[in-house]
Structures are given as structure tokens and as C-alpha cells.
Length: 498
Image 1: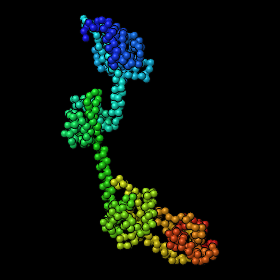
Image 2: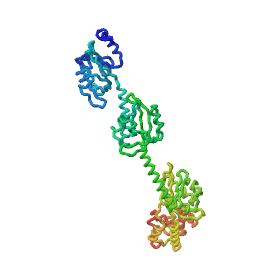
Image 3: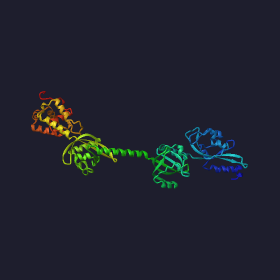
Image 4: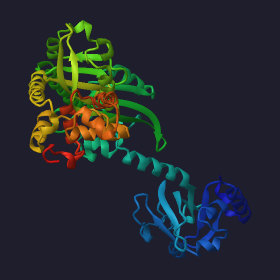
């Protein structure tokens, strides 16, 4: 445009009309810093509708609008773009946040550049500020910045034009031990994040093509020496209007340590499982399919492994009483564990042994399983039964039982081992309770019949039913059963005491 056009008032008005329709904001100042004109875009970028609301001059403008740099530091008044252009400075792409001093909730981000218009002689005639509203862009950048820095996953951003790192987050610095200034500005040749990558050629090719780099293992050199195994992936993006690559990482070291710890734990468990002299069985919780047994199990029950592994506990049928087996697994399903439950166990040759079974729930290959430990208590049970039998032999008539002897017999009978849920006193009928009470008094069947005015055969049937429900086999065991539960405590007396 010729200087003649700018000298005429008519052409100046026409130029203002052209500028008024631009999306860029334009503010024109006289050399004495007086604001003489602004287009609608400039007014809108300040939230005003008239030139006077911007202020009469640069000094009033500075009192009506507070400016901050993007790093949140306030702009000194003398460094306001409107002050700088008034001094005749030439600048471009100055980013400032603009807030009205009377309304701090409103904010715009301006990208400002200056222009000095001269006359024919080349002397300054007018001063111009040209600004773009980049608020939306700045907001998106701020959100990205916060997300990038807050992301715990280690990451760096590499500018593709010169392959230099322009951003790094705290996750990467913590993972590697680098300082921020050791990364920012460094090139990929100085800090090769793809070193040792299993598909390095592919990664470099994708980097040149500005294409996604798939996940792959790599080795990062650390500033203090040594290296770290990582998973690295690259995603192209545009940052500050430049083509970049976002590299994200996964530290493999915690996973590696966890895998080593798990492997060591599994090895210790396997050794203990194999070498323990007590029979142990592992089965699936869902269907009780046997997954593994130790050598002690095979030796004790005389089974070969092929007749056990892959079969269900019911198919092997080594627990003699099907009802006890059902109660055992029902208790396991409900409580997750049982402790020292007495069960009868059948060896392959049909020989019976007594075992105290403890069991717990474990996770194997992400599936719930039951771990059963069998303790052979056959000899102990035999000793106890022989003692009880000897006592029963010498006391055909239980009427002479003293309280002390009953308590000692109860202690002998009690093997101090929790049992599966069994029948309670309330499961007996009223008549069966009466019969049990009189048994505990030491009465014989005929005496019970007389006391209850029942036929002897009826009493014998009631006694048999009581034995069956209590899972006992003699009067002495019935008395011990009642004694263990504190029943009829006032009735433990001999005939002589009555």
C-alpha cells in the first residue's frame, strides 16, 4: 500500500472500515499514548463495547486491566504491550492473560504483536496493537498440561522437527532419576529412549512417518549408571502447533520383582507341599476335583497318583462316611476353613484309619481351591476307645457313676478337636430328652420305664433313637455327650446320693 493512501483522511476511514471487519483485534494509538481507535474484535476481547471503556490512554488502560504472563506472574505496568508499543518497540506473539480489574472472574488470553506506522519520511506516525483471542487454545493447553503433569504414567514429548524433548512429567523423572533440565532440550541421540527396544527399526520408521509406535520392551539408560527395563509406546500429537510424539512408559521393575517374589513363594510352597510327611490334598472348590496330592498322601492311603489326580473326592471315596464328606465341604464352603475335624478315611485296600482333617481355601491359578491336611489319629482313637470300653466293662450299671468319674470320662472322651456341626439338644423330642435325662441319672431301662410309665420296649426304642441322633454307641458316651454340653448338671448323682 502506498504512503499516499495513508495520508488522506478518506482513505484512512476506508482502511478503518476494512480493519473493523477483521477477526483480529486492532487498537490504534497516537504517539502520545492516546487511544484513538479500536475495532469491534478488540473491544470484544476486553469485554467492552466502546473505545472509552478501554481508557483514554495507555496509563488508564493499565488501571482498568490486569495482565499476567502464562506462568502466572503479573506483567509490570511498564511491560504492558500497550506501553511497549508506545515506546516504539517491535514484538510479536506475546502471550498475556487479560482480566478486568473490576471483575476478576473474567479472563481472556491474547497473543499480541506490535506495528509502527510511519509517514513518508519514515518517521513514526501511529502505533498499532494487533491481538488474537487464544483463550480457548490456552484453556485446552492448560488442561493438557495439568493432565500430562498429573499423569502417574512416565511420559515425555519429543518435537519431531529436531527430535528434541520439550516436555517431561514427574513420573518419568521419578522412574529414571533424571533432573528436568537433563531431559528438556536433549535430543533423542543424547537420551535414547528406544535403546535396546525389541523392535527398534520399526519404532524409528514409525517415528519418521509420524505414526503410532506400538508397545515394545526397551532398556532405558539411567543417569547414575545402569539401566531399567520398560515398556514404551509412542503416539503422534500436535503441541504448540508443532508435530510431536508423546512417549509413555511402563516400569517393568515392580512387575519383575513381583514375578520373582511369586515364583519364590510358589517354589517354597511346592517344596513344603512335597516334603511334608503329613498327607495333603488340593482340590478345586467348585467340584472337588483333585489337582494335586503329596507323596505322603499316596503312601498313607496306598493310592497311585493316576487314580487320584483329576478325580473328584467323591469318586476316590476315601472319606468313609458320605455324610461326613458332605458336611466337611459344606462347612468349607460356608466358612472357608475348618480345623481338626475327625473323619474316617478308607485306604485303597479298604483298611480304615481315623484322621483329623484341617482345611483352608487357597487361590491357585486365579481359582479358589481347598487345601486339605490329614493327620492320622488312629492310634490315639484306639487308645481312647479301649479306655472307654474298659470303663464300660466294669460299670454295666451306670448308677454308681460319681461326678468325678463322669468328669474324668468326659475329659478322656474329649479329644480337644472341633467337630463339624452336629445335632443339638433341641433336636431331640421332649420324650427323648426325658430318657436322656434319666440315663444321666444312672437309671437302667426298666427303671426309666417305671419312672415314665412306659413299656420297656418303648424305652429301648427311645434309647436307640437318642444314640442314633447323638452319634453315640453306649450309655457312658451319652452321659459324656450331655456332660460336655453342661446338661442335667444338677442330676449327676449316684443312687446312694438320691
